[in-house]
Amino acid sequence: MSPAFLLPPEPLRSLDEYLATDFGGLGLQRAQGLGGRETIDEVDRSGLRGRGGAGFPTGRKWATVAGQPGTHRYVVANGAEGEPGTFKDRALMRRNPYQLVEGLMIAALAVGATEAFIACKASFGPELEAITRAVQEMQSAGICRDCPITIVRGPEEYLFGEEKALLEVIEGRAPLPRVLPPYEQGLFANAPQEGWEATELESGHRGRHESNPTLVNNVETLANVPHVMARGAEWFRSMGTAESPGTQVCTVVGDVVAPGVAEVELGTPLGDVIDRVGGGVAPGRVVKAVFSGVANPVVTADHLDVPLSHEGFRAIGSGMGAAGFIVFDDTACMVEVARLFSRFLYVESCGQCPPCKLGSGEITDRLTRLEGGIGNAADVAEIAGWLNRVTDGSRCYLATQERNVVGSVVRAFPGELTEHVEGDRCPRPRPIPLPKIVDLDGGRVVYDERQYRKQPDWTYDES
Image 1 (spheres, rainbow, N blue to C red):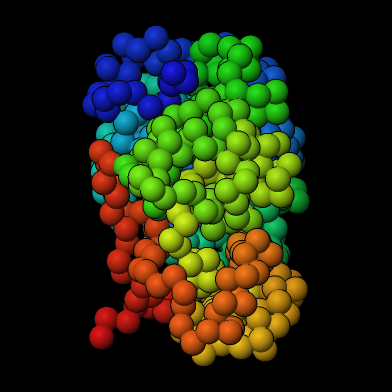
Image 2 (cartoon, rainbow, N blue to C red):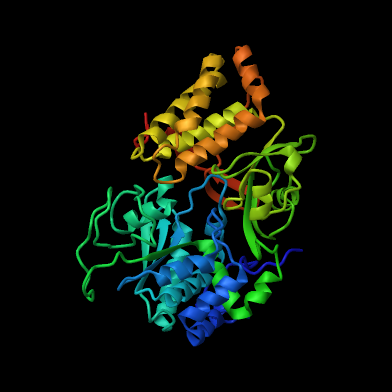
């Protein structure tokens, strides 16, 4: 069995239960003894990488924010989980919200933050209840006395989870990504930037105003921190791989017997993850394709032995993302899969960068024609053309996702596009749901049916 420390067997319902574990509260206590600089060094030595998708080294990110000039700093826990196929942050907040809050406090201490935020979607009822309880109990116990925590309830939009758009929501605006990253242009800054509004100058500043460097970390990243600090960097490095140490909370949905979420040691082969977390595909079926959310190129059946690690997925030309794996068996039409994912990205695009909105819309329309049996070679050529320029001028990663996902399907399954061009109907017709998860428990998954009615202007067709 893989080591598991992030997901307890049963949810922790009180601070007393958390403090009764063999690590609860000890990480923050150690960080307070070490101070900010040495805390950052310990996290850096652990090799902990961000669990939100990019896998950036956590210690290096903290050091960057701590080293930026500025009178005020902030820390944000990104719990706005909206990636199709992913449910790990919500599972963590439900099972043990206290480790998230403790990790947030350690991060705030490390970078010298004056205030911290936890951002979740307003629709995350059980998660909001759990983290609100944890914050209140830890504040009452004096654990959070040095840094106030605000819980932000945000919109349903996918871009709410993009770190630059996340800051906009915390400041009371729509989730439209800014130009500059949070460590350069943070919360409540008062310096000019295109596509951004300055806020009133905070008290305490002297001379030239700095732009409030802000640390944004994913929920799972922060949940790891108390364990790293309480047990040490070497303990953390005893699991996983040299470049990707520790464990990863994985979600497995799609064409599997028992959709699930579980903690897995990094380095485990992808095929084993699919079998252990999702129960594998149905008898008589085989895996055809796996997507790590809608951000990275497809993983085909011949690469199921890839180790669950950033370096492993990079070696096969893909990415591990947030370890939310969408599995398709040999009955799935990959043109329909590409159309489904392309439409999701199209309607979720904010429109600030015209090539992204226009390009993803055109790609979606052409894939819809192909899937409907009325497409031709010109549609395939148009898809290829837009994939080359959809990312022009983009200020976030969404357009790159469009290029990664659709482009990889075109390259990996060219025969299926040819079948759709030459035939008058899809050769593999069957419903394929978009795996945007509302709930996942006990092998039962609920997808967001309302997403199908979402329009490119972020309204919903209720007719």
